[in-house]
Image 1: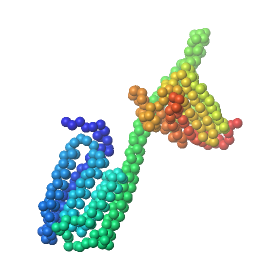
Image 2: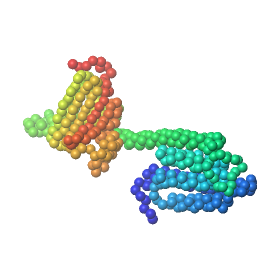
Image 3: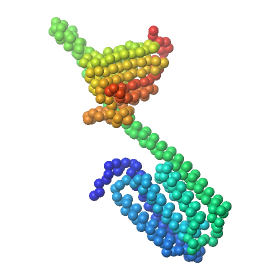
Image 4: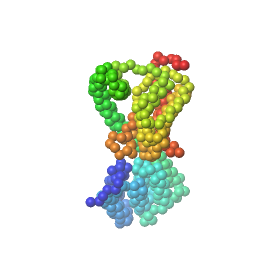
Length: 437
């Protein structure tokens, strides 16, 4: 069994084989049409055609078509050059038959336009124009010369000096150019549309999977609310227990556990709020400065060993809503920076002209080209662990929900930066019409 080459199942290779199969089918129709035309011309119109030579052309075309069918059984991709050569063989066969049966006086000469149309649909723009040039040159050659033993009753003597012949040549060339131009453009539009639809289908499939994960996370958040509330009550009782009250170390442990329970409840609230549900909490109004400072303080508390440098430049300390989705997005980017560069992370926030920019940089190895090229797509990760690669994808979705963007780049001196930009109006409450001074 012949092994298929890598990428054989790619859509381009499949389309190439299908196009070659279509040319084979059309060539069988052409063979049948040529035989029928010769029979009608000889028996119906009593025209004295060079039957041996014309039959030889038909025979060679049949042999080539049989070889093409055998070629389809070989598991190799069909290239544009191969399709162009196949069309060129058809043009040569048609030129030979026209040469033997009257040249430019043969009404079947306009079958050249079929080859131009096929090239415009199947081939790239450059090869399409080459086919238009080849057929126009063949037309001009047939005007100047044909088989000396036979001429059709229509006399086109004078060659290119004849206004009628010159008009036919100009008409053919014009038709070939228009076919090549417009069919090529239409085909390109169709291919662009198909590529856009394929991208939309891929995106819908990815988002459907993420929505499914979000539903599972939302359900888990609901389920975890009850045991966390129970733990909160129990820890509250422990805090007032006599055995704990006299032991300072136990008091510290209980306070730490209560803080972690509250943090878990806050995370669950953020998940449910992002999913459009609320666990009884109201939306928190704050300012840009307080929101960013609190975000950094909370992340530092959860990662006390991290070395995060934080700076901000805020031109107007406006009232905003403490968006849980934005907070989780920044936490995710910071977590990635900490994993890539445990010794140093840097967060810079700049608010200018109503646009908030949050930049997280590290001094790690940077992003590989594959991740940069597919930024915003799920499961694009170099970490060989199942389920990885969703962080930047989800962050990209959050940024887009805020009418913003998320971009990533590698630094010349080493390390990487992730930049989040969005209009501050996406976080501004509707009834906040003045800034906090």
